[in-house]
Image (cartoon, rainbow, N blue to C red; front, side, top):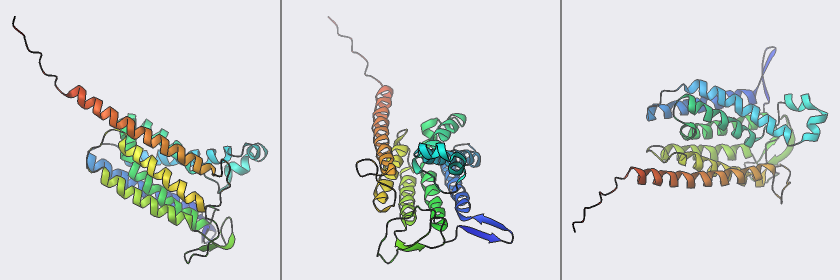
Length: 263
């Protein structure tokens, strides 16, 4: 694997390069969604702010998982190129997207619905950065023919292990395609976002079974606990979305005029 690309006296981290490509890919999908929905908003600015918030959220979530180490080595942990928590990035990006939805006058949930396919694409492409840099996001040892080694990775291993970033890339692209297809017609507000949270949470929960993350809660990793939270939140949002849509339909349905009864 190639953690760095050397050009003369300069070196470029492949994780950062793929993070940039993830932002560009997500921006293009968001722009196309704005275009087909007739939304006049700046996809580049929105993507840039959400990307920064996602990176900050992912790093903070990761370091706060080990508060004792943070107290001992604060700068080392905060400036380490490895160590980003998926759920922290999701929370950070969601908060910024909700704010941007109000700015763009499409509403917080409206913006999340529009951004869901882009978020899935961006996440999948970003995982390639983990693969190329070998930052420790790989899986457990395996004898499967597609197992890979990371002799030159940031967290090296000579064992053949599950290429879990590839698994997540495939899952993310399938989720993005599904959400894009669902968005062809208008859905109840929050429906697409809820489905994104459910499917993304499920994908991460499953891949954790072959990841090397430590098991902490009832035999589950931190990411699996966060994934369960994502699925519960997504299911609750879908239920709310459908009830809200039915209520709006009922409120807009003209009530029959009361007939006059003659005595």
